[in-house]
Structures are given as C-alpha cells and as structure tokens.
Length: 160
View (cartoon, helix red, strand yellow):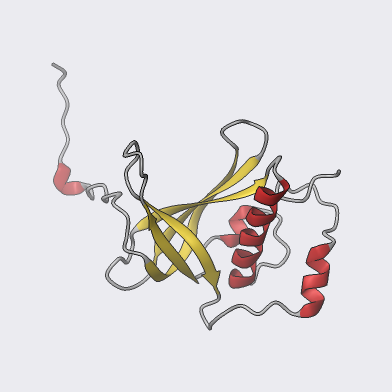
C-alpha cells in the first residue's frame, strides 16, 4: 500500500470514450500530430476534434488521415480527405497542422463497429464542410491540386 492524497472533487472526471451517435456536428481540431503508419512506411495525421455545440458539446473524438502511403490509392484518398478539411477550414496552404486548430467546421461522423469484437466501437470522420454549407472547389483550384508544388511538408506528394 502507498500513502497518497487526492481530492476527486477538484478534478473533472475523464470523459467516456463511447462513440457519439452518427451524424453531423460542429467541431474544431484541438490537437494534431503526424506519426508513422503502423508498418512504418507512411505517415498519418492524427487529429483530435472537440464538439462545439449541442448535446455532445466538449466531447472529443479522434480522426486519422493517411497522408503518405505506399499504396497510391490510399494516399489519394487521404490527400483528398485532407483537402476537404483544408477547404472547410479555409486553410489552403497548409504548412503546419496547428493551422487547422480552432477553426469550426461541420464534420460528418459515423460509428465504426469492429466485427471481430476485438476493439470497441469508435467514431470515424466521413466528411468535412465549411460551416456555411458544402465546400465548392473552384475549377482553377482543382487544376492546381492536380499538380502539387514541391514541398517539404510530410503530406506533400513524394517524388516518383
């Protein structure tokens, strides 16, 4: 046994990690980091979102965007997701993930259930929109995205 003093009345209890129901929520990124993928051959952008209004205000949930991957298709999907988040936040030239912090966006989430039963249910982000409505990408912007400029950012397209 160890002697220890702690007054739980002075500390907010940890929030439940049960998923919030599927739907659309106004939320913002409050934490972010770039980490290697599980197999070490790519990079993931890990994002922590906080709901800003409604019944689930202040609840946090997590999202991942696969920004660099050996699979061209996985990388294309991840960069498309990142583009949607950037358009929704108005951050068109992302140099650091902190630029995404504190910018309210409408996020569509679903509940992902692990069929094997090995993992608990979790939330998965399935879309991003600007608060004012759906994000429309101008044709000129689409052309610019088709040929990304060279960059030292980890999510920039690797040289072939």
